Image (cartoon, rainbow, N blue to C red; front, side):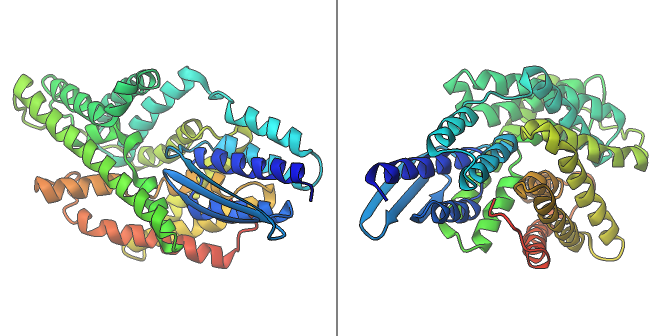
Length: 406
């Protein structure tokens, strides 16, 4: 291999690794994928990935060796770019693109703007918050207020994209404002469930998926990345919870205490419609391609109803295992049929199951001693739910082995 060819290949591998990290790929999947791509290009690669750093060691014939260390920011899920990047790698390996063309195409994918724009993204924030409140079954008025808070939170998110100072305090500020506004709404609508409406408004920030990914990395013995991801998620949860508590204290000082009035219950059929609605908003929030969106929505439906069916015969915490098993098998079959990354379907399905909101509720029980939704033992169930999730995904990979590393 000529020196110039080696330079081009290592440049592609490094840029590919940084791009997939930016698109939210878990460390153990990213390391395996980069090793597979390096092997296909005739190189030997060794990689160490964490949420904030990347180490590349690339060599050929034990003669040419190159080390590269990069400081990076934690990635955010971009399933559309992930799918496009996977297609690009397939085209390169099969000879449909040259290295130069692949590098140019990868640069285009990295710089591609949000395909859904401001309007649809804002709608997904509001509808997603309302759908979560609907899933909690806390009354139609609470669904409306949750959706309005979701729109307000997107305004802060949009502002944070243009302000570094706003970005640093985005999560706790969102929780504070949601709590103050919810307390104000309670003055003329006493049937508002303040804690749950606050949780619904900031649900986009609740790090349930990050906690699950961190535990999955720990289960895969990727200890550095897994530990870092779990601790980062826990700190985000603490910031959100503190913001909510501070906001409720300020809101009650401004508007006074209000006696809660139980709202009319929501019929079960309406609660079940929340799942496909929430799954459709995730398509936009995760920036998935439209051609992949039906599979992602179906993944959420498979995950939820598999869990509900299993809960009829087992403990609800164990029912999560069967939900994760079902969506894991479904995503691996999707990867085989569509020749696309399993993560596209898996992440949109598993996010329906992750107990991020339950971890938040459990934190409230631990610190304040108050329960939400009459679920007094939910804090003790959180760890079992997380373990059920991870076990379900592991068993799914055994039942239907994945064909792709992503």
